[in-house]
Length: 393
Image (cartoon, rainbow, N blue to C red; front, side):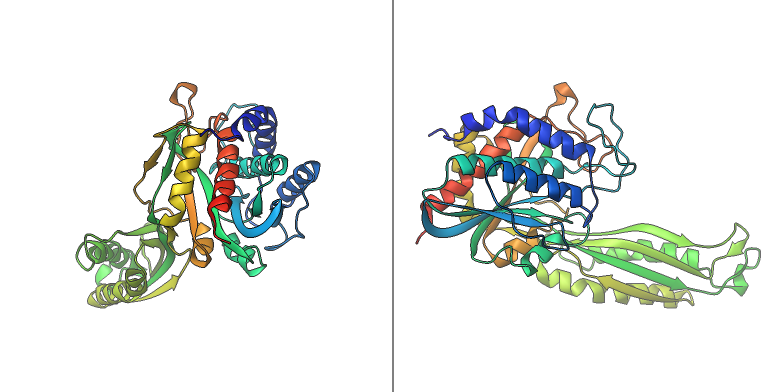
């Protein structure tokens, strides 16, 4: 059956577009979302909805919409922070903050969740409650973990979220059951040699040359030390060292990322990397250290939440509009929610090549087709209602 919320969502489109463009023009970085949070509070209050006190460092908030009868609580989540990237756009709603822009679609996520709140406020669930989570710091700072610490998931039985996807056309969605986003850990490698004059390399230990060998050798951890059927990425993103073209560098510092899905592989990677790094450095008369900082865990979608989501997609967008998608090595702090309760984050299509909306996430020219906004708002509201209707008392 068609979603009874779709007509209301379409009528809400002018407001959704205006809200999204306002947020797009005023982006804020992780844990700096003060104006964004204030905007959300104002919109919720105008809908007759009460937001929680500030949480998660002062910018997060929740809002619970109560059904006609008591029952379980399902949560819907949106992230609010922007990226430290200069936007390259001629759109009238281009970012007004130099070097900061909504190039991952969090302005759309926030807008659609406000829209879902508007739809649910008009047609409250027959039973149970819907908690809206407006979360800071997804890009940097594990805002989801802070929200959980402050009680955002208390009494919540399941959680859904949408993430815009410029690979998928408007009017379509994508889901992944099981591991959906990789764990993301940071590594820092320090190679120490002995500096000297570039004309006399035999009197020194060239840290740059050793570092180059380390970069090559650690890729063998991926190709030769790990199961080729288990996804693994090791990337060195920065290399810093040296003073001048005629000086042999005494030390080099490198940083990078390790992406995994399996918890056992994730746990084993520091020792595997350290063994190779130390051996390569020692072979050339240098020393090396490895520092690992564990970041977001892998996001694992609960398959029990898929039927309600697919039913909502069919009702809002039509039959056959949801595709099963391969996991991505990108990270997502929705993982923290999904560790605590059954969770599912799905992809919402925002691609429209005819209008030029085809750039990838985090690209300076990323933008999206705003026709996706009412679809996303209706989908979030519909799946919450369906889950509550089918949940056991």
